[in-house]
Length: 249
Ligand SMILES: CCCCCCCC/C=C\CCCCCCCC(=O)N[C@@H](COP(=O)(O)O)[C@H](O)/C=C/CCCCCCCCCCCCC
Image 1 (cartoon, protein in one colour):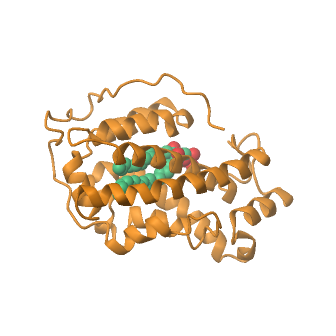
Image 2: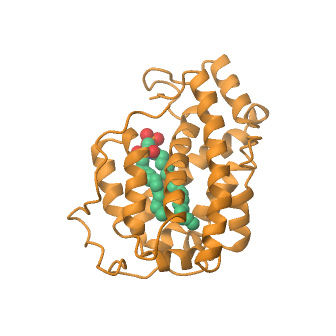
Image 3: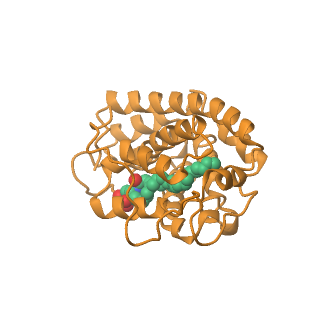
């Protein structure tokens, strides 16, 4: 279960970055198209997010589709929105890398599914449950952060799917953030993240960067993706709730 919504507010871009212009296009560098290849879109749609939770071959691939592979930094979708997104994508990379390292490590067989990972780490006291201690980067804790981000993504995509031409991506993104992930972030991070969202391009450019096709195709793609994201989110949420892992430090 998510924490109760604390102070849902309308977007106020901070002073640190210029405000989004009237037409929805922020000042500064334009996003480049074609950062999310059709193949990657298929991965996002079908990246194992079907309930099987074979996450090493699914979830990290899905996240990589958004983030681009680390070695090709110029291809990162987020970076196409400007360098200010680097601090967000870096954290995403680091967390995916932690999971991939577990999978490739000597105990990798325990990390093949989310369920087996949670069981293995709990059975072997490999998770810091109450306060940060000797396992600050357990698989369970790392995945929890990506899981919370998935909720943001679900909310953002649903807003994007039902948006109109004059909707602002920065507002949709921020509202989704306030409703989900922000509740787990300290104030300093919240401010930085919200300021960063002000740099997002307007809806037309954003759709172009997604490289799915016209607006209708984007809406179709999102219509397929959102239920899959919801399903994976719910399965993970239930597993973590059953094991009292939703508030890991
Ligand atoms: C085609 C559609 C475009 C949308 C694609 C968006 C894909 C988003 C992909 C990756 C996001 C990066 C994942 C970030 C994970 C954040 C986990 C987290 O909460 N980490 C915090 C705790 O870390 P520890 O240090 O304690 O281990 C950390 O403090 C937070 C850092 C800042 C992260 C802010 C996350 C904001 C999430 C939304 C990113 C979306 C970017 C907007 C693009 C439209």
